[in-house]
Amino acid sequence: MIEAPRLPLGARLINAAARPFAAIAPQLSLREENLLATAREQTALDDFGDDSFREPLRRFLVSLQSEADLTPIGRMIARGEIVQALVNRLEIIDWHKRHPEIGAERVAAPLVIIGMPRTGTTILHELLMQDPANRVPQTWEVDFPCPPPTTATYATDERIARVAAVLDRSESLIPDFKKMHRMGAQLPQECVRIMAPDFASMAYMITYRVPSYGNWLVNGYDWAPAYAAHRRFLQLLQWRCPGERWVLKTPAHLWALPALLAEYPDARLIQTHRDPLRILGSVTSLGTTLRTMASRTPRPDDVAREWSDWNAMALDAAVDARESGLIDPTKVVDVHFREFMADPFAAIRRIYDHFRIAYTDEADHRMRAYLAANPSDKHGTHEYRFTDTGLEEKSERAKVERYQRYFDVPSERL
Image (cartoon, helix red, strand yellow):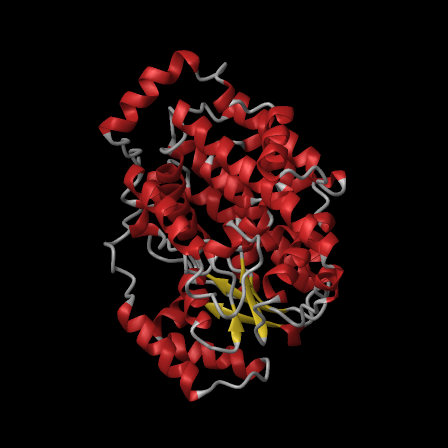
């Protein structure tokens, strides 16, 4: 079984000293009204837009309080994330109100990567970012989107250093995380962070133990308002810093394919594939490490059980979307993990050819240079095994058999 890493001694001492006061300290409050009031105070704004965000926020807060077993540092991290999401919501709505032309911005035919975690989506996103024609949301602008970025200062914006400092602090708490997933202020960011102001985010499900919130999100949530807000977010980012096409990604799109395609009917999809049991082993390791930052008792078996179900739901939804005709075969390219890792540039060229996008010499050169400078083991090797999940292979294989059969995904050695 995976062992959760320990926090540095300084962080453990802070948690021990603050534990008696954490639940009553105003600066660590996770009460809805306190969080809303703090966001209003920080922005001098009070229009949160429609109320669609309130139920997911409330469900998330209930899960945090009753299930996440937060440390004082965990409460501080969660509170900071929630307040910043609310601040971003207030400011994005305010910019749209003061500049209605933002809402007329056209988000045309985005490329959307919809593969599951640990299937090569991160490096694929990073490589596609090297094409000058592609507009990829970077972490700094997603975390702090207001004021909206400009082309002239995009590479020098002061928020880049601000976000880099935040990421450095995170890495000081969980230094092994960079072996699992590269972080950087100017690296591509996922749509789950774009959806944070609507509190419809898979990021919360991996960072904290919030199974009630997660089960509701993947089973009972109406994703339409979140995708409408997703478009408004992209419109804001591209208003003064446009690109030829957006390249977006998150596995969470698989739970919400009808809403995604209703909002972006011209979206061009890239689905990456890998043995789901290998995915589960990796996600269990990643989630256990992430939850170490915030939880007193990060348990690998909790992560494994939760993500076993959530992954299976996503994969079944992918098959449903193909069998029902929801996804037009001309609007999707399937990329298998082994194929991509064997020759990523052949896979990328196949994607470009399928969607009739020009694959230029400059894009190819920049992608190859980037991969040479950023090998997968640049920060060390992420080691994980399915057996560390504590789950039974036969029953887990049965959960994903339909997906593997439909997409011809081979089982890997576990």
